[in-house]
Structures are given as C-alpha cells and as structure tokens.
Length: 359
Ligand code: GDD
Ligand code: MG
Image 1 (cartoon, rainbow, N blue to C red):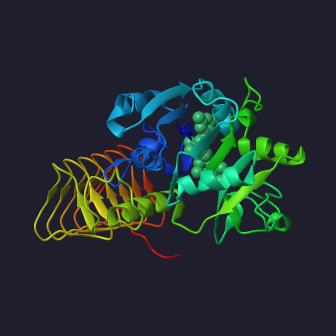
Image 2 (image 1 turned 90 degrees about the horizontal axis):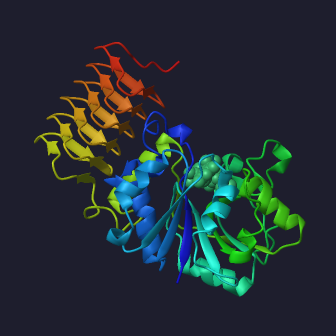
Image 3 (image 1 turned 90 degrees about the vertical axis):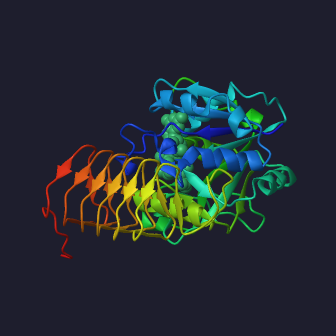
C-alpha cells in the first residue's frame, strides 16, 4: 500500500479574492477543482490512501470528494482547528495513516502541478536509505522558495526557506513541495503547536546529522500560489502540456464544459476553459484564461491570462490581461484591467471607468 498526506490547509492569500470563500485547492483549473488533478496523479502513481490535511475552509472538501471512491482512492480528512503549519499538519495527519515503522509516506503540498515520476522518487528514496527524500526543481529566481543545495551524491547540505540575504542564495535548486518521509521521522515532529517543516523540521534533521536526499527533476513544475501561475497551470492542463487524468476532455486549445454557451464567432484559444452555464458572446476573444461557472463575456471583450470568477461579467469591448475578477464581479463596457488587477467579489465597475496606461 502507498499512502500520502496532502497539505491543503493554507489560506491562499495570494489568490484572493478567489480564495475568500474557496480554499485554493478547490479553485477550478481545467474544469475541476485543482485538487482533483493532484489526486488523479497520485492515484496514477499507485497511491491508494490519501490523508487530506485541512484547516482553512476545511468543511468544503468532503462534500465534493467524499470517501474518494469516485476517484479510485480512499480519502481520510484531518482538520486542524488552529493551523499547525506544514510540519504540524503532517504530524496531525500521520495519526490517520496506516503506515507503520519502516514504511514510507509521501507528502505533497496542495498547490503544485508537476510531471514528476512519483514512483521513481520512491525508488530513489529506497536506494538512498534516506530519512527524507525531497523532490527538487531548478528555477530562475529561487527567492520565493526553499533553497536546497545538495552534494554530488544528492545529499542535502542545507535548507533555507525564503532567503532574505543575497549571500544565502547559493543554489537555484528549490524544494518542489513533494517528499518521501520514513514514517518514524514524522513521529519526531512535536505535537500541539505550529511547526514549519521547512523552517524547523528539515534544518533540525540536518543539524542532527540525518540523511536527507534531494532528487533534482527537470519535468514540468509550477506552484499555483499566484494568479498568473494558476491560469498558466489551467491552460497547460487544457492543452495537455502536462497530463492529468482528471481533465474532463481531450487536450486542445480550449475546454468548454457542458452547459456553457459559446456563440459562433467567439474565439477561444491558448488553453482557455469555460465553465458550466458561462456565456461567451460573438466577437469576444478569450486566450489562456479560466472562465468559471455562470460567468459572462460580452461582445468584443478581450480576455487574456485572466481568471473570471463564477457569475462575473466582462462588459462589451472590455480588456482583461493578467486580471482576476472575483465571483459575481461586474465589469462594465470599455474598461481595461491589466497586470495583476483584481476586482473583489460582487464589486461593480461602471462603463469606461478604468483605463490602463503604462506609467
Ligand atoms: N493543513 C495545513 N495547515 N496546511 C498548510 C498549512 C497549515 O497550517 N500551512 C500551509 N499549508 C499548506 C498549503 O495549503 C500548501 O498546500 C502547502 O502547505 C505549502 O504552503 P504554501 O503557503 O503554498 O507555501 P509556499 O508556496 O510559500 O512554500 C512552500 O512551497 C514551495 C514550493 O512551491 C515551501 O514548501 C517551500 O519550501 C517550497 O519551495
Ligand atoms: Mg505554495
């Protein structure tokens, strides 16, 4: 049996307003809650029991995923009433695992889309005889991540979470948010108080001389924490750049869910997804974007790399580029919203009220 803990308790602050009423893993990407893709990928890697470590808006997961049988897995829900951090969540979730001494446990951050071969990671862990094995990836700017330099054999030399000082940036290898833990190591994490696995557990294990093994992998990898990367991940899933068995359709330039209405003459491309009950009018152009259920894109609107919340409206000729509209936001005609612009849930913007100008 292969078991995994999925960390899904974060507040998703960088994805607000979409995460005000929906936890980040439940925000739809390529037509289904993002978590469905992670579960499907875990399932495909042979995982048969997943413990969901929930906290923020914990109550919304179970009604959707139930006991997991519809997804080919067994799901157990563990909720921290007070968020216990990544380490505390792993520790709390471990009580629901069936793994015993000597077993290995997978742990996944709940906001990562990756093409990692999880079975290969488990084999590398076994071969290295490590306490913990970490999936690492290389990024151009590692500052927003956990830095993990390794030696030639893959032995982890240090773990520096979100370095502040330039001299701390000693590598472009970062923690990719997927680990294999030896079960006993999880039991050493303290209970009853918040613990960061990145800031406390990993540095502590290294200081105690434990063997942490890093596996650098070059396959697809994206952290969905920011709106730009969330829409990118959804578009890549729709286009099949990265595969998920949970995408409800064949790979292509767009995914139109049942019950959506796209008028002839509307153009959808770049991996755009249009949710159930949403409408896209003739002459509108939607590229690389997520249009959630019941949203309306009106005539001549141009939407690029944006998220349009459930029931939101994009008025005629309005331009969105890199924008996020909360649920039921109502943007009138002839507006221009770019570069991280956000419209709060239910907020109305009159016609021709906002014009973007570069500086
Ligand atoms: N249950 C629970 N409780 N889950 C939590 C908590 C908590 O208190 N805090 C965070 N999480 C979950 C989040 O929902 C997310 O799935 C995961 O833990 C990581 O938290 P993020 O808030 O997304 O962290 P990050 O993106 O800033 O950094 C992490 O991921 C990077 C890779 O994307 C770290 O692990 C970095 O080291 C890593 O490089
Ligand atoms: Mg993250």
